[in-house]
Image (cartoon, rainbow, N blue to C red; front, side):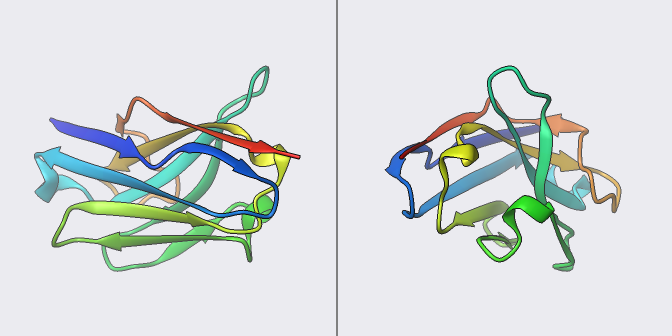
Length: 119
């Protein structure tokens, strides 16, 4: 089993930046892909970005050029650096991990961290 704990959410003004972190523990040797999803009120959960163990990344069109996903395998942690934040980025952000090399990790989930962007 794998446990994921997110941190770094909060309230920020439009144009600002935040960094989210997700620390993995447990059977981490089984993890290949990790990523971030978000869910805004009344909307479906959507993939934001993902990264494989070897660093191959994938981004949603809405965040390309503004968000960067990275991974520190030694610390079993994945990060999401969010720049030029917009009010429409407001959502609960969830970390996910997967045993396969998928672009859409979904075997394990964190509890989520709230990101609120004010206009």
